[in-house]
Length: 165
Image 1 (cartoon, one colour):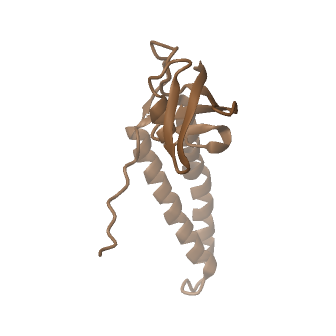
Image 2 (cartoon, helix red, strand yellow; image 1 turned 180 degrees about the vertical axis):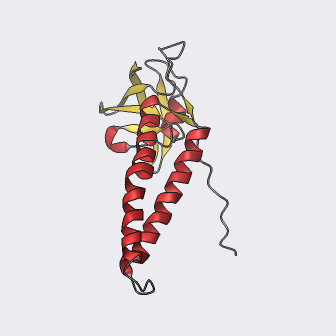
Image 3 (cartoon, helix red, strand yellow; image 1 turned 135 degrees about the vertical axis):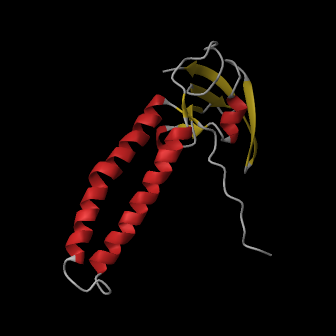
């Protein structure tokens, strides 16, 4: 049995304007602030002489590789993303970028925003469009019932509100 695993897909290439702004800010921070700082510290460590046992030099080079890797990823990803900044033609249905309020059978209400996979943040209630719940919600109207298979079994929700920012 081999250890080969096919590369993961990058997910749906959609992003909200806010998500794109965060990614561009991270790219700017890495390229124009962090990388020059690390480059400066690496050159200072290299000036100390013997690099073979210089932990600051080794750590700095490692940090540069990580920063460069992230910069390459962000640059390529931003080139391939489509920013969705327009409202859908039917605001009474759930589409990308919508805030959806759901109520379960027990009466507990929850609210989620459907965003791209690069913006996923459960702390702010933002779920990826590739998530099973989001896929089940897309195209549904107000008061529709949505059933999703969860690890604990099938669960049902009812759409009680749809909002677009």
